[in-house]
Amino acid sequence: MAIGYRASTNGRTGSFVFADASTTDSAEAAANYEFLARASGGFRFRTNSTLTTGCNIAAGTGTITCSSSRTLKEGFSEVDGEDVLRRLRSVPVNSWNYVGEQAGVRHVGAFSEDFYNAFGLGNDRLAISHLDADGVNLAGVKALDARTIAQAEQITALQVENAALRGDVEQLRREIAGLAERLRAIEAMLAPRP
Image 1: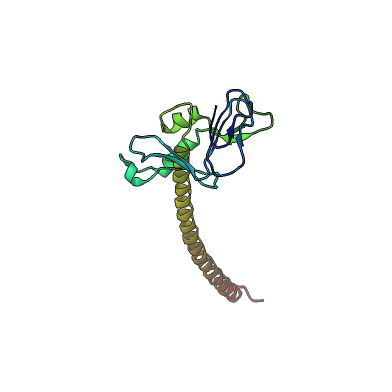
Image 2: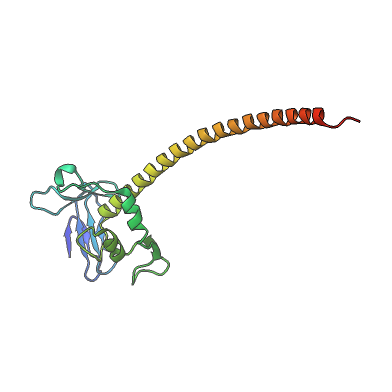
């Protein structure tokens, strides 16, 4: 099925092509059972009747941005970054390919079941929302940043303490050297004379 200006399935079985009128070139399916859409002004996908939630692909980009405004959310609760890091330890990260995908195409990531078991996020145990994965990553990074700051402060305090202890040790060495010199003098005075 082809809809729009110069849209063509190019004889491909089961293909759907949508094309806007932004160019004189045809938008043609490249494979059987392909969905192709050309919208040079960008894409807006909405998932509610008021058109406030969904995702966009801005014109000329290859990035998907999804609604994430505070005004669209409710039920806020703090996230414990250390707890996120603890939970992440139970989520294996593997390299893999999709069943039926071209040989040699590799991906890296978690399995949705493990992610869901660790965090209970999203509405599907068989998929990971990029929004949830991003949130877990941000919480983990913030926890690691807090650890880094705390450890840097500890290192600075230990360096100051170490410098003070080195000064104390040097002072004690001088005192011991002085006492050793006095002891030798006393021993010399007490030594029997011929």
